[in-house]
Length: 316
Ligand SMILES: NC(=O)c1ccc[n+]([C@@H]2O[C@H](COP(=O)([O-])OP(=O)(O)OC[C@H]3O[C@@H](n4cnc5c(N)ncnc54)[C@H](O)[C@@H]3O)[C@@H](O)[C@H]2O)c1
Ligand SMILES: O=C(O)C[C@H](O)C(=O)O
Figure (cartoon, rainbow, N blue to C red):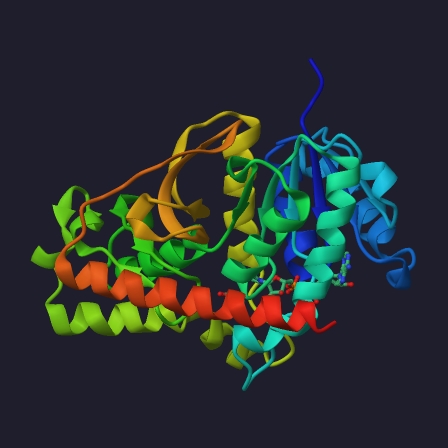
């Protein structure tokens, strides 16, 4: 049986770090691709990573390239191509540049890896994954976005820091778009099975949620030259693992929702089962009145961004 073929488009901070996590976990053979203008950079990073294999004990092959021919027939593709934000910018400020990049990447993926599960990471996430789905024309189950695993990991980290407990004992769910409007679901957040509302008072919980919502900006303001990559890349690797090992992970994913939650044909963060087929099932929870209103608000923000993107792309 052959190993899974995992291609990562964009060999920058998130892409190269994702290659690192995937190789170390021996999830498959990895192809790291960047634009020709970066010359031999992807080959250099790939060779460097491969030379870590005798020390770390993995047999995954890692190659770097600027040609989509090397990615042909991929089982999973992680798309990290695009510019990151800098202090003072919002993710939405990346829309015009990254929509064009994601469009060109999608065209290449469609031509070379028609059966791949595509995990989009480029920002603004929900609009970029919508565009990837439109350009590839793939079954929507095969095109999804990474944001919720990262946002939930941040939330779990902050809750563990607050309570002085293991992160492993915290289970949590955030829904909606990857942005300031993300929606916490307290009824799905617990510590060792104990509802979070019994451990933290509502005002303090709201402060932790607010820090989570602004989690990306907090890292940007510390790094100053770009945005987070260790945790985002680990989140992508978890989704890759779900596909290549058919794990049936129940995780928050940016998935195309039609009737689900009355979204009406947009990508937005929802709990889903992820396996070899990609997003195999979207889970519909019954939300409270205020959660429904907050989720709708988040969906409206995504819809308006997609409309702006479509207008920008139509006008060249
Ligand atoms: N969804 C999330 O949770 C999440 C988390 C972190 C970062 N991001 C986003 O991921 C993207 C990448 O972030 P980063 O920190 O790795 O940036 P980076 O600048 O380090 O790397 C981006 C890479 O993409 C490459 N690239 C540009 N155009 C390309 C194209 N057409 N084809 C192939 N490669 C191309 C660049 O040359 C660069 O090497 C950004 O848009 C960022 O906002 C999203
Ligand atoms: O904040 C960013 O711009 C990158 C990413 O979306 C994140 O949440 O870290």
